[in-house]
View 1 (cartoon, rainbow, N blue to C red):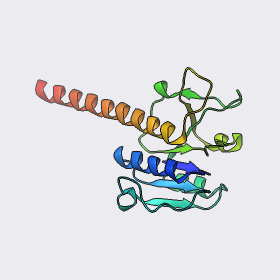
View 2 (cartoon, rainbow, N blue to C red):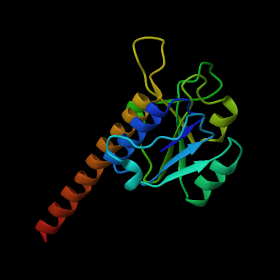
View 3 (tube, helix red, strand yellow):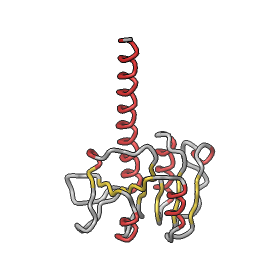
Length: 164
């Protein structure tokens, strides 16, 4: 999970809590504009590493590449230049960095082009979701889909073993 240029510590705190609850290995903050938080309600900083990247230059991109992470933008781009996949259709990779933009400016087209995928969260109104809500929805979707996939694979293995 990564958030770029976030302004509000409350949103980062909520993302930290969600990341911990859904088993994310680490949280990356990129070019944060908020004051450092003392804690969040789950005290995530004791359980999940927080990696801080100072600017929005290529440090975060190199970091994701070194970790062999698929970079997935959770974004609702305004134009048609960036192809997006609705969250309900997206197949989550095993290893991913979910990248969220700032509350006031989202992710630039340049940053979106650096991503392996851009996922949008459809809604009935033309407004964007709060960054913490969007991140939590993406993590929940990942959890449900990967859990279902794992349970199905276990079911098939079990059925195959019983036939022998």
